[in-house]
Image (cartoon, rainbow, N blue to C red; front, top):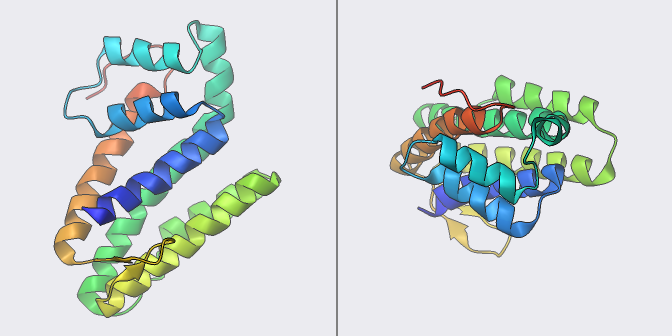
Length: 180
């Protein structure tokens, strides 16, 4: 379960920084992304009200500002856990080309120091997860605690990452269109 919380930290810290939304709104995003309920029109409208985008123009502005970074990080998370599984099974650290390409793309996309620090942090977390998976050891969290990484946790994180990608694509659109 700690691994899944780590996944959420990757996503929602990035969201709060790049989207420049307040903490309650990022908490609402976290809730919607991990909820068992379908993303419906009510949740969609609730989220956009909380981030202060109640009309199409406001949504367009926020989407332009956030979609590149947020969606890329959500997909990055999906790749991390696929590569973690490969590393676990092979006993060798995967080079995780897909996630590495996203990191390079994000670095090319921004010159903002805060964003670059976030991207560098994501790269470090990727390396730590892959190393811990390959060696079947705990990953050390920023607070010094060990985070158990095993195949079961990786599988749970993969499922959550896949779910978050679908939910993010539903939530981050100008007009609500149910697509799954």
